[in-house]
Each structure stands twice: as structure tokens, then as C-alpha cells.
Image (cartoon, rainbow, N blue to C red; front, side, top):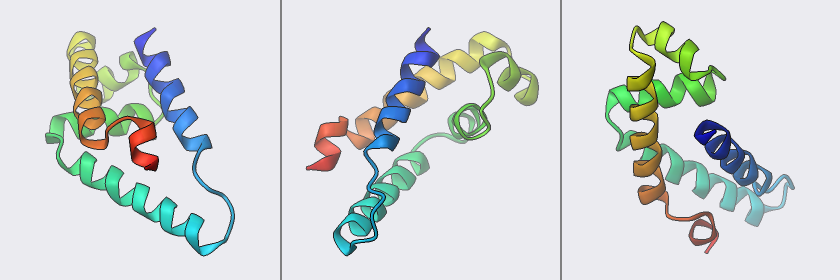
Length: 98
């Protein structure tokens, strides 16, 4: 249930990414990308591994646990902590747009 909630939040954020080719939209998109990369860099490697496998690899908790050879509960804990840290680093979606 939580994974679906977070997954939906990321999908909602992705919908707000400008798709036009005007310079202002490209700049906003670039600035968001830089913020996300910086926020990801603040995570511990084990947290980045879980986030990368789940969100960029489109894997379930169970699949991530098999891939990383970790208990599923550990994957869930690391995912939750990583998402909390990312949220703190990035602020709320509305704050990012400001």
C-alpha cells in the first residue's frame, strides 16, 4: 500500500515536468533534475540501491530483496527511510516549484 502511495506521488510529480521546448521550461526541468540528483547523492549507498532497483528498475519489494540479497522487511525499511530523506532534501512538491 505504501509503495503504491509513493509510486503515485512520483507519477504525479512527473506529470508536472514541462514538456515544451521553451527556454524557461527547459531551465525549470534542468533545475529539478539537479535537485533530485543532489538529493539522491545524500542517501547512503544501501538506500540508493533500494531506490534505484525499485523505482528505476521497476521492481517490487520482493524482487528488490532477491536482487540485493536482503530480507524483504529490510528493503521496506530502507525504502521508507530513503523516501523520508529525499522528501526532506527536496521539500514538498509545491515548494520545489517555487
